[in-house]
Image (cartoon, rainbow, N blue to C red; front, side):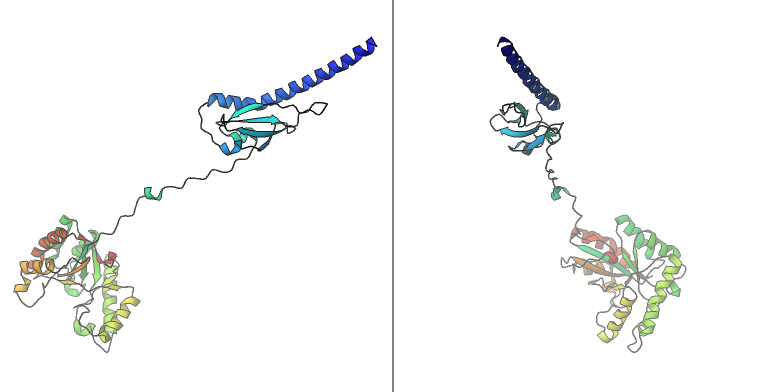
Length: 342
């Protein structure tokens, strides 16, 4: 009996030792699993939670061996999470809980615990921080100068516009009398102004024959091709010599259709400087200034008609005061190809 008792004791001791070894093995395995966690916690003690949703109760994860299943349980009072080994049981079926606390503040907890994190929402940029496109100035004046260039007036106009930093639209006539003015055509182009088509000869009888629109079309094309071939410049805006106002629809409508076909936009004016009026008094410098500045009526878009020829010295003299007065009324300046309705 003593021998038998010794054998039972030995068996029990062996079992105890086996269970102790098993528990020590489990503890060692859990320690190895926790080692990265402890290192991260020690290195980043004050780090805010990166994936706090991973610490919810009932989240499953697995040990590195894939054999031990574990469960996350959160402690809302301590701000920590505990897990236990749910598969470690002794021979009698008693579950052995291996407890450890995992702080919420572990960075990249999804990697350490084997739980896939839900992707974080990318914060949308604040649209209010995006640069806004510059607004179109409310009041714009388009200075247009017809019938040039001329040797006596055009250089002075170009010098003034350069000094004031203003661009204008020149509706030119490339007729034979204008030949030899290459330097002025090139100055208009090189200094950033716009050249517009004003026909080739400006002859009303040829342009406005009610029974024949071909001469009108030929004039537009001839002026266009001359400027393109000689100066490499493509004109896109047109002004009817004498304007469209007051002409019958049977004259203007078929000619508008021709311009549409050729890719042109056409413009009249809403302020006439009066520098071609029959009355000499109307052509005086002061009269021209007043005719422009007194008729703006605070409109948002002004298209101002001026002329360029050998006898338009008063126009040249009036232009500085016109520019200054328009600026005082709040106008900026642009060329017609940039026209925006207003």
